[in-house]
Image (cartoon, rainbow, N blue to C red; front, side, top):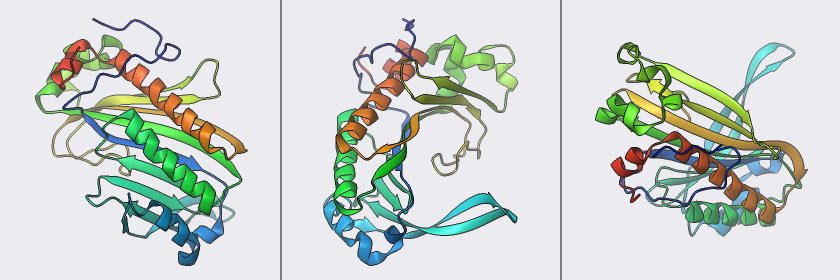
Length: 265
């Protein structure tokens, strides 16, 4: 049965766990005005101690930003602290202007949001940004193998698009991108989906290329506005973003999709 509600305003449906979920990455990022001290080892030490029980492995990296300045396109490097759990399925990233949490082993919304809440507390207590500029949550699903040829039964026709027509068999790549204003909220949803050929990716930082064709559903909800740092409000908003994404996901897929990936409908 197809879901016919408007996924931008409808209440989130009850979660149906998928034993073999095609969810390849979930992430959330908080951006704030630059705090230069974050680049120093001695400054981030207390933050590391606060999260080290969950994220025991620290691997610093140099990040690269591209920007347009008076002399044209320029690049700059910045320190990014990468904290991992022991099997490196969860990663926390801290730079002078953002905190991010991401995983390739998502188990539940409550677990993900609980982890992010603990990070926000550590950020408030040991880094103490006074304001934040942006909060976003993103879920990426990937279908590959035989299921790529069965999109008609797995996603609604509006989402399958041209792949559901006689041209679909000849399409090597097709990507749809839509930007929605979430009604009654100052939020934006970026929804991307489509077919990728082997070896291709829409975002090398979040979606690794694989050796076969695949179909991607990439949903991102964000609020870009300067406002005070408030841990409880940010935690609540993160949950609301995740629920809005799940509502859109459930609108986009069929019951056959849920059953195919191990859900009990």
